[in-house]
Image (cartoon, rainbow, N blue to C red; front, side):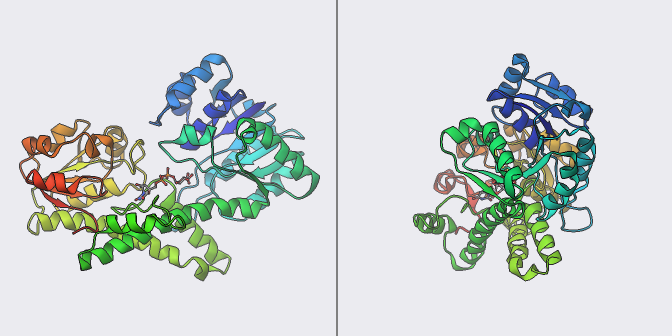
Length: 436
Ligand code: UGA
């Protein structure tokens, strides 16, 4: 099938490459000419495992191309819109500038029978408003939220755990759902749940899923706060409650909390939208979820300050990690980078290391010192703070090796990802999050 993908960021670039990899003919469109130039050469403009390979392969096959010219969308049967919806600068609501710009640009190129599939995360109600603009062209709007995780984006796109299509009522909607089934034929054929619903439900499925995940993380981080004043160990607590299949162990990783381009802004946008709908109280707990999450960043910093005897002034601190999670170079709302900035603000001599995210981090926080070399960061450090659980720090860094490089023996494990006993027996003072 011929398709266009408008917006070539973390979502769109992966979607375009993945659709081409399953046999479709795809044109990826973005207003950013640097990004397009890189993609056109088969080079992923960001780090995402597996993307480089499917990108290069699809371009070589001739099924995938990239352009800044929206007119190239003309003639595609399906148009995916996957542009960003960041948090507004002066509030909690989602900024729909890019969504509106994408539809403004696309609408003149639509032909009757086309399907426009919105993938961006939008406030509930957006799709029905956009449908009023799409319908007069004879095209049909469907809302097809995306659930991919960064770091596993290729796998999640090619083999998602569910597909959701919000469609208009009646025959038009049925036809559009049928077209989406064809688009995702390998997943549909293997029995992946394909849920056809209305616009509002499709939009809400997306934000509800992210709100639930954020709540799960903040729940366990709230338990960490209680553990900290009672001497309990939150990691054992999580293991124990996680054995209950109704609860489950995943997303019960207590630590410095969640970040990234999705969870934080999505729960805020959901709160803002619920307020507009007169149902602010229904999701008032999301404010608490956000507050707990932000407190954990402060806590990690406080652990470093306390471990260094009350002040980090002129102390050298190695911050291991800048990305909001491993297998990603994304530093948007990263708890790791935030902790580094806070320590720098307290007068510490901070050096940040990350295998992939240094370049991005340096761009937004140029006042910090950076290195991609973990050992260089550890050299002479008075304290070490682990804030992104890359294998380079979690598995491959031995306490003995770190001890040979660092000046001090203080390790703060902001992700509860290290073997506390091993670090302690190598002579380190180990501090976890919500652990004795
Ligand atoms: C999240 C959702 O998991 C995806 O399903 C969704 O499609 C995506 O947002 C989106 O809306 O686009 P992502 O932001 O890639 O995906 O990252 P997650 O794996 O959800 O992690 C989010 C944050 O939570 C990270 O900072 C991670 O370190 C943190 N986290 C995760 C914890 O602190 N504890 C955990 O137990 C799990």
